[in-house]
Amino acid sequence: MTLSAVGKWVLGLTGGIGSGKSAVSDMFEQFNITVVDADIVAREVVAPKTKGLKEIKAHFGEQVLNEDGSLNRAQLRHIIFADESQKAWLNNLLHPLIREKILSDLNSATSQYVVLVAPLLFENNLDKYCQHTLVVDVPVEIQISRTVRRDNVSEQQAKSIISAQMKREDKLAKADDVLDNNRDLTLVASDVETLHARYLIKANAFNATNN
Image (cartoon, rainbow, N blue to C red; front, side, top):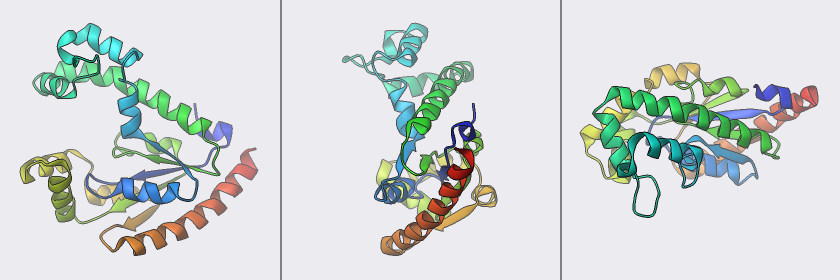
């Protein structure tokens, strides 16, 4: 399934942890652009009563559920951290469910274009569903300090998360556009407004050709 078949112009928005993707995607939302967030989708596919959670419960047992029936993420992380085969099983279950939900959400959007926010846009090949990509960029030391402050993790844990993601220079090389987010937010917002105007032109041309 390709989005071009339904005439949808999709902007893939990505960046390393702590780069400020959410703040930037919020700016696009202010222009009434639909935002599909892969992290939110990943939570939705394992919500109570979903196929995803039922499969996880059947495989791992009640130990991975909270008292209210929701997924105990900390317990699940503990299990898969110690067992690569269990991690592989979980990825094989979740990746298709996440991809299917992302495609459904993108295709049901009614705004002039759609923003797909995904930390692992390139790593998980989600960029193939996008007509254009934008990387939100900050220096690594800023990523570390923001992640430590926001997620209450150690500096070493933050560095480990960053090292598990695509290298900054590789991500920048793949991007169609790069947004410097190590500045005052008013400057960033001004750049987003400029990008939005450009993306509208691209989306309108794409939609005229594909509809």
